[in-house]
Length: 244
Image (cartoon, rainbow, N blue to C red; front, side):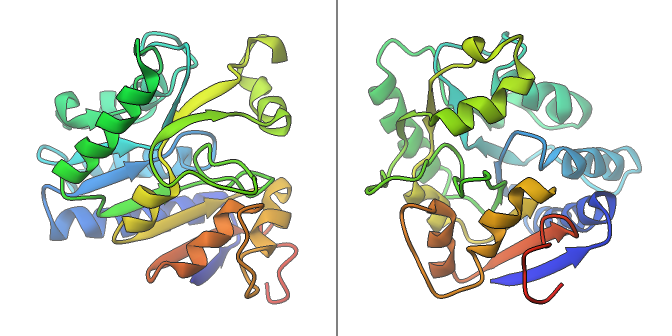
């Protein structure tokens, strides 16, 4: 793992965008693994700027999103499909037919999850995977547990995660209790991983990445087994690291 600490979230976001842009410039039909939530918002804003300035072409790019809430279709304003359209896809020249988000309203959620893994394989895997990290160390909706699922699956959200996501809904009771999420297998198969963490509430989880311990009780620690992970932090997220 490579760690890089920035004085501001804005600097972090600009740097992360250049990393992603480098992948796209090298491979025009790159497969981008995308995340939602507050962590990658700055990255997406910077990618839009690069496109607007004529410095990045998304016309042949494909994308795979990590997860989607169970029970929300793509028109719901808190669905992750809606999030991606609003914050990235509507503003760049990507073909939306090449953008993929798990189906949270499939009649057979497990079968849909299996088809999602088949889709990822058919695309040749992910070239660069963007990740956030939960305060409890989850990535995607792979929550702390004694066992983790290898493949895309339906996950029960922890109360901690539901509470953390409640800020996006009218009330905590409106937050879905399940999500369809990529498992650790597709994530670990990505050729490159960029993990973005901002804010003091992520500091504990970030600290867990610097020692030699790997545990399913902190799913993000499995990334220590990956050969190409870049962790980008602002000062607050890095506040519990020995070297700042």
